[in-house]
Length: 518
Image 1 (cartoon, helix red, strand yellow):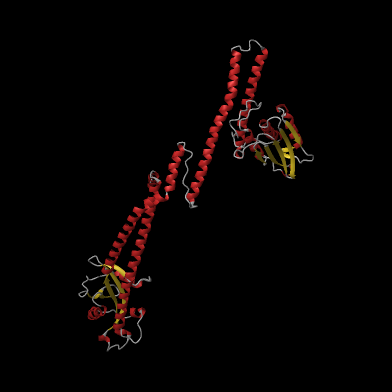
Image 2 (cartoon, helix red, strand yellow):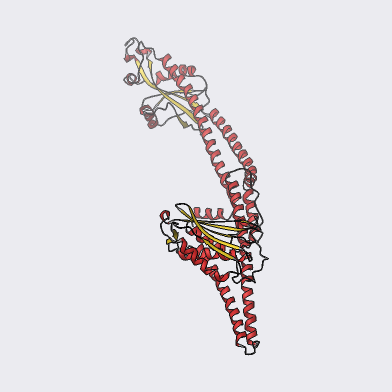
């Protein structure tokens, strides 16, 4: 395992606030260190450039005072002069030292790097002897620098400036008056200790180190608390999630007023939990409703079977037949419940395939009208279908199932001698509307928005024992799912004590979408 993987695993074991704190602290330390290096490097370069400027100025002063010529002397001309002898260099070194001052050490070198004369008594610095190759390199280099740094015998840094120099030979003055042959060439070496700069840089480094450590100490003291404050919504999310996982679905996050990522996450989380709470409530109601729906027929079946086993019919074939007819009706009731549950499951999974095509509204309504005739209990049922209705684009069997379910609901909650009417019309050429209106007991305004929810009953206390077709709270949910699969809509309006109206809006054939899988 390499170090990167080990570090990743070590970080993964830490809590998120510690990971954020360490990353933030490390990044801050890196930035402060880089800033400290930049500041110290810039300061050192500025101080060295200032000291080099002093040495360059002194070299130019020496050059101008010692070279007496009618025309300025350039480097190429100086290289053509004869070399300066050692005794001549010794005679001029004191004058040069007086010009540059006590803090600067002056020496004269030959062009091959040999020391000709030096005066280090006034400066207190050890004699600095340069390597011959270094002298040659500095004289021939094309680099723009004007100085270089070397260590003397004491290990102290010194700044060195080399300048080609031509000095008038007084002994040759009479032989070659003001001629180039009267000059002698040498290299002026000026050096100066960088101890003041080194001391200043040491102080700067100390200040930077103390400042960086101080800043990191403050950051270390503030980073974790600030991160904890920033992560407080996540900590609250963890706490609330723990309670929710334990079953407290009523728990909610306190939504921050800001519309940032945390605020949007909190609102999305609360919305998700609200939907979960609703789903769990529906699931509980589902279990209760299914248990109730199954218990009733199972109890009836058990009672009838027990009577047959005990011989309660006394050999009366009619009595036995009545018991078996009742048992058959209860089995059919359970089959309808199972079929509805399977239909909802298939709708949720998108497994119901619609056989889309032209559906005649007259035929659809008349078929349902005939099917419910046997369910009437002194109610009045009418069908009102105008001529020339456009064809509906849909699945005839599924639409018949929806319309039959709605009419059966109208019959259940319309006491005799109530009235139920099935009608169809088309206000727009691209839509056909099927309507079922009854004069039954109606639905309250509080319950109306939920009538299409699964397993919802507007009045769970109502008994349906007298109804030949028992309800289970799934019919309207299945109806809505099937209508939406046809790219249509279903709506319901109702007034308590006056009746209910259900409207189904379906696409007409000429504007229907392409066939597909619902």
